[in-house]
Amino acid sequence: MRKIELHWQILIALVLSVVFGYFFTEHVRHVAWLGDLFLRALRMIIAPLIFSSIVSGVVGLGSAENLGRMSAKTFGYYLVTSLIAAVIGLTVVNIFKPGVGADLGLTESGVALEAGAGTFGETLMNIIPTNIIQALAETDMLSIIFFAILFGFFATRVGPKYRDPIEKGFNAIFEVMMRITMFIIRFAPLGIFGIVSGIVAEQVDDLVGIFSRMGVYMLAVILALLFHSFVILPLMMKYLGNINPIKHLKAMSVPLLTAFTTSSSSATLPLAMEAVEQNSGVSKKVTSFVLPLGATVNMNGTALYECVSVLFIAQAYGIELSLIQQSIVVLTALLASIGAAGIPMAGLVVITIILSVLGLPLEGVGLILAVERILDMFRTSVNVWSDTCGAVIIAKSEGETLKV
Ligand code: ASP
Image (spheres, rainbow, N blue to C red):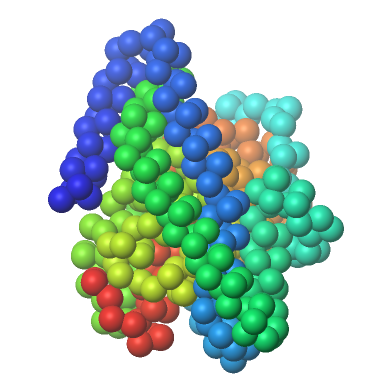
């Protein structure tokens, strides 16, 4: 009962925040703290939550064989779905050709884009932390995941005298973290009100102008995202796991709405874990392996968005890309989406990497800035949706009985 109520509360908060942001633009700063508080609370729990969940999940897997099988399935799912998403993006942008005749006068230069822009190689290297405490302090997700898997795995290698207290201890910490998560989720409507009214107020001046200039590009991105989310992923759920996609979608309403408003897969992770476990009935073992990894590695929406945007920029500059170059776009978009962090605008930053790989003008990024915030909301929801679909499919393949 509470779940349905919360879901409606969030929707009502969304509608109210749009109205408030639009009509009371000056007063938005008085409610912005609600959003900040909510995001701070979510960030607070991410590191302890993923660390404890992965350790207890991996210890629960018990053997190297189980861990290997689970990793193979998880990475297989990430790669296949990201690749499909990227190809859908490419196809749609070739059909719509939104960049042809686009207004290049829009170009803004001097955008600060260094943050988070690491090459794929650097990202790989940084997975191994030089200092795990620092990694935890900075919520460096991939490093935390790496160390937690290592720790959990070797905890199964020591005798029961040591393994048992570790297992019990981390299970206990995880349960407490989940309770804190549920507590924070109750404040989601207030947090979302604070965040969304801020976004609306920021964009309100130029809303009509943005839509008329960038309409076709936005439409191409959103249509491609919808196709991936509501056709490809449901088909995979149905045929790979005999899962009811509509039931699963309903079960995911709170994390999806949160992903939409926060534009951050990482911030949404605690909510996604809670919903996948409680509403869809996936075991802790699978949830704690698939979701934390997925939040940083599996970004279907981002891969798709990058393909559409890079091609859009090329079209706007009148540059024809050959089939081989377009395949390079798909491949780099795939790798870049793996490297991108689950934070707002990470996808925009990695676009510059693809542009430089292809020798396209970097200022092209200026073309898509105006609608970046809005499209980030859509692609982040798809990123999170795909993670949760992966969790139910993998749980089913492990023989679990689910609620969806
Ligand atoms: N905001 C996205 C996420 O957190 C990443 C991106 O910018 O594409 O999933």
